[in-house]
Image (cartoon, rainbow, N blue to C red; front, top):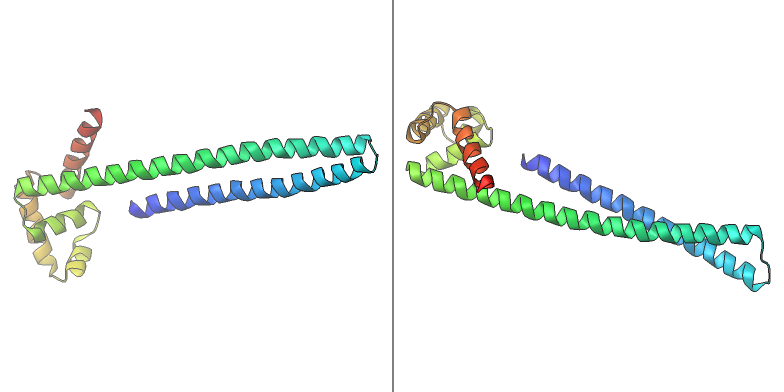
Length: 169
């Protein structure tokens, strides 16, 4: 889940960068067309070609303005999304800490519960904690008993229910 959030942030950063690069290219093109039109006008030449160059330059300037505005909007949205994600992570973390304390989980059980909620399998949890798989299974059994559920899915659903209730209040 964390990897997906990071991937979304990177994708958003790439999108912002792409729009910014386009805006810079438009600015260079607009400067070229404006400079060319100014040089042509200063030589006393005023033709459909010069008028077209000026029209293109003004269109590019409008594109620059819109591109800059859109880039600013995307940056603001990215900041807002990052803030919302941080709040959600903080709320979920606080909720887990509260529930773990209410259930009377030991530190080891709380760690196993967290790994389990993150989707790690028993073997992975055992390897990460440097304990036997049987120890992890025993801890999970204790966690389920203390929380009043019978499986990892039921444990996870407790947190979803709590988070959904938080959103409505």
